[in-house]
Image (cartoon, helix red, strand yellow):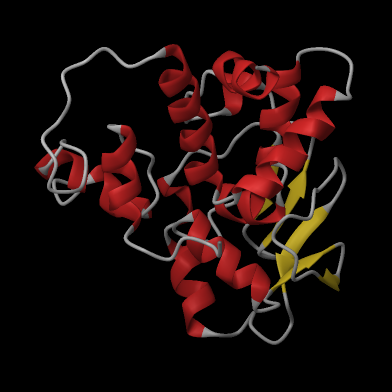
Length: 208
């Protein structure tokens, strides 16, 4: 199965809450959750209490939708997190947040993670001065993320950066607006996440 390319708002309605997949639109009355909270499809909404499996799976799907990761890739990330000492769920979120497409979004270089992924795939983003076109690349403290020399002068880059302060900058990243570069200061902490995910349920889902 390929990557989901359908309406992003459909995913929010599927899990029943805002996942902020469409950038600034999600903060306006145009958001699909504000208009229609019921799940997509013609079926009537079930009133039954969801099973434990359904609750855990929905939390896992929320994480996948937020970070735009396919199931196989998400499972590999979980396996990597399980091999590390400490809290598995916390390390899982750190890996997801440190993906290059997520960092580009956090630096306000893109209006959504989808747009950030596209910018990386098209080779518009550099890491430590070298072009990087792999959205799943994991950055580390000290890495410098910037724009490629071929796009720094383009209007769409300047247009995106004009409204950079629209989202608060997480403490583990720093932004130099003069040079249009960002730096990874440290690894992200749970307090830096604006999307609340219950990682305990995700770990339980894969541990069953």
